[in-house]
Length: 565
Image 1 (cartoon, rainbow, N blue to C red):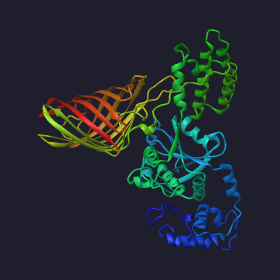
Image 2 (spheres, rainbow, N blue to C red; image 1 turned 30 degrees about the vertical axis):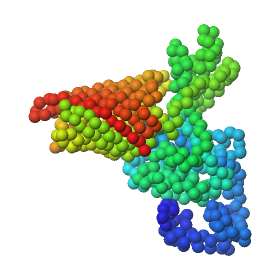
Image 3 (cartoon, rainbow, N blue to C red; image 1 turned 90 degrees about the vertical axis):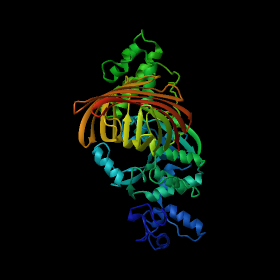
Image 4 (cartoon, rainbow, N blue to C red; image 1 turned 180 degrees about the vertical axis):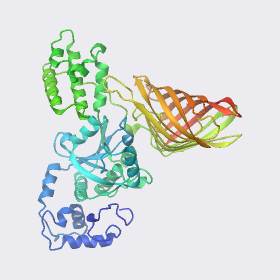
């Protein structure tokens, strides 16, 4: 409920015609339905709404409550076998703007030893993101153009989707909900089966509905009150931790993480062999029978080949019959090489140890010999200059970033970003990603000295190692200066992120405008993470400007303190 109004939009969820807006009327109608003369089978009100039934029976001390034979419900209940609950956070997807915030869903743990056999509760927009136009998808998602639907399916299927197909690391947070609380949550999920509510990307999204379920399980929790205008998945995990819900944490590496680890252990001269195996350019038995290759390298070649084969199949790059044949061949040959120690996959920093989403910043500096002060606020979420600790390398997504400055000469807006998304994806042996970025809003990165509205979209490539990453980008752009104009820029940049508390960013840009003018831009920053939610940053900006029809360079030095909450 949100006040007296339910957030469920499906009229089939209510017994009373005004049930969505009138809790008392819905309560009376529910009792009337439970005590009616209807046949007490799977189609009865009691079987369709077990959470309401159990709650009313308890609150009203209803020893004489009617009963029903709910065969379908009992069958699913026995299969799911609710014992405890885990909050699951698939981290960001490097090349998907819709997934850069991450995602959350719940796993209902059973008495099985393997968690893979447990069931996952998911909530998502009822949309096919693979076939629907991206712009239409975004607009409808922002305006409630989709229904949101719950699903209950085996956990291993969700892992296949997020960890393997979408290359997303999985973080599991075991919650201290009791078996009785988990059971109550399951009853509510059953009631939601087949009903719908309008889905909103920023508010009533996947994570918001997971908070709802946790509150259903333990009514004393007040998790949703922390969110008003946005519900970011990782922020809901922070709130669960603050509420004392999290007991333990576990990490499951993505298929991408595994393959990148194999790239580290494969000898360079053998690096092409896993790709050749998947492309059927070489047979697995040729690897096994090659006496010049050490047994460890043979194992790495075949194991990485199997992982890459599965990855390509999940992306529909290989037909099923070819996949099955190659998988059988490679696993059979790998079995001949005996057991070895597991691949040593380094666990990345826990997302819960990264900074929070909202950022406030203050600073001082100098521009052209004049003292200047800065003040800024950003509601969400992360940029390349923030500490990368707990976040996916090379990703940025910002909404409504505002930075203002004041000097003895003027007070002005330095930046007013509506939306900025960056995906700097490093290319490697197994992954041939391209990098891209886009930005909509106002800034001072143009030849004029006033804030200018622009729309940019660019693409390029990136390569990296343990020290950091390097990238090249080409950015066409449109900007407004009395009228709309166009330009194109070429950028070269690098980021050093090897050291946990330091983040270095440098970018050189050369632009050519439709007027024939050219412009050079340089940005360099050094960030120091002083705590989980504080950062000190030194930054230098160089920009060519045209003042009174003459080109002039503008240089800005600044010292900023950033606080995240």
